[in-house]
Image (cartoon, rainbow, N blue to C red):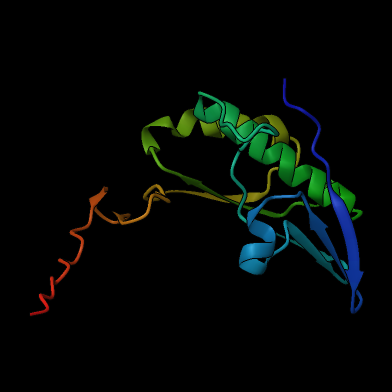
Length: 147
């Protein structure tokens, strides 16, 4: 069962900002969602659980990501029925149906315009080449001999 999503809303300069407490929000300088006037803009969201782990299935991850997104939208006064556009990024397009089913469970009655594309997975290990999925060669250290 997906745990409830805690959302904190702040206001600055007439805009309302939703934060879900992600460690990356202050580091990168973004908000989970921003309300400007009557429009709400949502950041790309991964399906990380409250304990920092990911569900084992793509569908589980998609359901969690959508729960986080909907919680942010609702915290800013919006509703799932207000959504007009979604974008879905998957790292394995062969699992598109799992992700599509999760999307359909949330949006089947709303039917927003959507796009699903495959992207390369991000790898946050130091020195890892994200484009090729392998370690980059590290520069050789020069040894200086003092006589």
